[in-house]
Length: 392
Image (cartoon, rainbow, N blue to C red; front, side):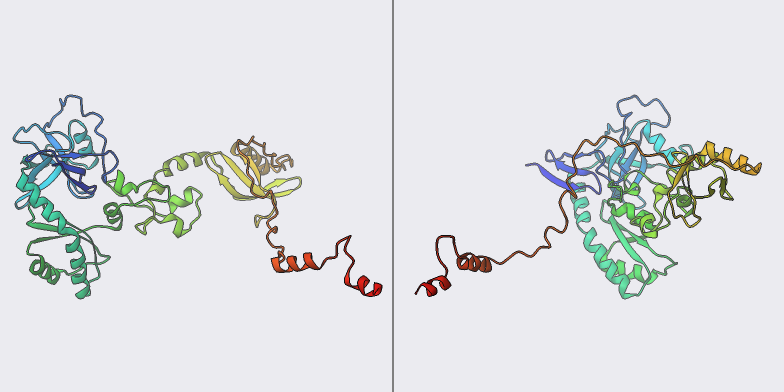
C-alpha cells in the first residue's frame, strides 16, 4: 500500500513505493527557495565534485559532500552529518549549479568545511523523522506560552526538529537583546531535547511563513531571495512613488525589497533630466514643474505653482532648450500646449453608465393601492354611482 505524506515545507509530496523505499516528488515552485536545476543532465567536470545542496524545513538549506560516492539524485532523502547525531534532508540540487549557489552565498569551496552525507534513509529513519515533524507545531505553541510566562520581549516564529529527534531549533525575533537562559531551562525540562535558539529578522520570518504579495506572486523572500540588502525611502523618491507607508511596506512591516530592483534603471534614466530650479518663462506667463515621467522622458508643467490648471507635457530635450533660452533672456513661445490624446479603438463594450443611476430612486406604488385604483375606476360602458342616483 502506497503511503503519501504532503509536506510542502520540506519536499512537496513524499510517498512510500515499497517497504524500504521512499521517494519525493519535487514540484517546481512549490517549496520555499526552490530552484530549477537546468544543468542537471550535463556532466559535472568542475571541482569540487560530489557536492549536493540539501534542503530541510522552509528556507533552511545546506551544502554537503558525498564522501561515500553514493548514487544520489534530486528528490532522494538522505541522512547527513549534524553537530550531534544526524539530520534528515532532501537533495535539492546537484551538478554545476551547486557551485553557482555557493558563489551567491559567498562560500569558497577551498576553505569551506563541508559536512558529510552518510547514507540514504532507512525505514526506521523515516519513522523517527515523521515523529519529530509531528511534534513541531505543538512544541511551537507551548514554547510561546512559556516565553509569555517569563514576560520576555521576543516572538518564536518557528520550530524545526532535527531528523533523529534529539534537537530542536527555535527561530525567534527580538528587537533588543534577550536573556533567555531561564527560558532554555524551561524548554529542556518540558521537551526533553537539546535546544538551539536562532535569532532571525522580520524579512527572514516572512520567508519562513510565506505568502502572497500585492503583485499577486509569492513573496520574493520565500521564493528566490536568500540575501537581504538595506532598503531606504530614497529608493521610493527616485522612482517618483508616493511616500505612503501602507503601500511601501510589505508583510514583514519593512520597506519592500522590490523597491531596490528598479532603482538602477531610474537613476540611469534620470541622468538626462535637467534640474529645474525656476519656472519656464513663456509669452503667456510662467510654467511650473509639477511631476516627471522618468521612463517616458516627459516633464509636466502647469501655469499655477499650486498645481492647478491643465498639465502640459514637454519632452526632456525641449525642456533643456527652453532653459537655455531663458538663461539668455529669451522667452519661449506658448506652443507647448497639451496634445490631444488619440482615441484607441476599444475591443469591448462597457455598459456601465448607460442607464441612470437614479432609476431605482422612484417609489413604486404598492400592489394594494394599484388594485384599489383599478376597481374604483369607472369604465366607459358602466355608469358610476352618481348617475344611477340621478336616474332614480
